[in-house]
Image (spheres, rainbow, N blue to C red):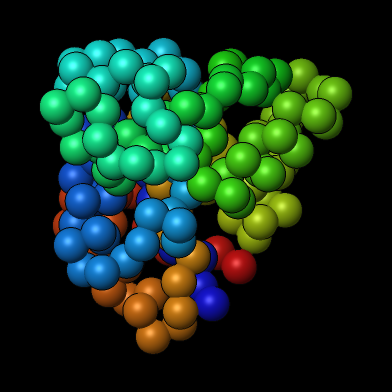
Amino acid sequence: MKTIFALFDDYADAHEAVEALLGQAFEEKEMNAVALEETAKQNMDTLGIDLKRVNVEKTEKLGMKTVRGLEVLFGGEQPVHVGDTGDLLAGGELATMMVTQAASTGTAAGPLTNVLQEYGVPQDVAEAFRAGINDGGVLLWIRTKDERAPAAANALRAEHGRHVGSYS
């Protein structure tokens, strides 16, 4: 299994990357995402999606809208405060564990960066990921079979992902 990370400067590009991955038969359960609560909320409001009403069980229907992808990952999640970043939403099992671990470190200096490094991300890239999230970006990663990793990385790059790579 490979884990491919990418940072997106804006929510729309991350949304399109998730759609591209879904279009290539990757599954939401393989994906993880982290963003500031405010970033996700503002963008979901623009799409007409109430963040709090998205069913965690992923019924895929919310009123007259079909909800999938990034909105399903973030929908129904509760924000977690991380000292060096702020209130984060984490979608996906690994993202939830990572953000929870960062929140529980008890230090104000660098918890998200430190946790990313524990996942194999080099310090400079981990810091770029943290700074990108603080600037309204979305950190997205997918854990998939080794043979599918190049296709995942190409999809993330095609949608303007930065620092795309497997760092483990």
